[in-house]
Image (cartoon, rainbow over all chains, first blue to last red):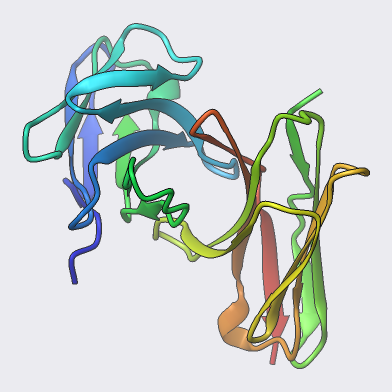
Length: 114
Length: 109
């Protein structure tokens, strides 16, 4: 199955630390978006990457940064972790050229900050 | 006022019943309307999407959009225990997907 792959699946970090989450998009997709889903809430848009550049950004502080590589995979970095950053981080991919509104989501990385 | 409002439930219905899930929204700029299903410890899975007012049917699922009332619905016919999940409405604006909080649905055998 060539769906969206995220790693790691679970992560525990200490307040103040930094974390890097990784995402490989679905085969054929070139656009990657990251979402934060707190417990009992819907996913919140963090940012979107296309052609290795941040194309759009949601209402998240600069502590959240990202990168997209030439093979379309992506990383989400969070610095100076806060307890409130504990959440499920979801990666979603789509094709910029295909108007494929089937944004495909990965299973997420569950981050716990202690 | 949030852009997308969705009752979080939980909603419990007996197996075989028709389920109705709803969302309201405030931004007329939304272009596409989607429903995602999310099982515990999984990412959201796209069920249906539409971009116009009216109904769209796919098997046991029907999505309904009323742009004049800024109201969308998802109907599930002949509900099954495997339909138990969180259902998220979502809307597209400038290539950003805005989600509702999700409604937790329990189908009772």
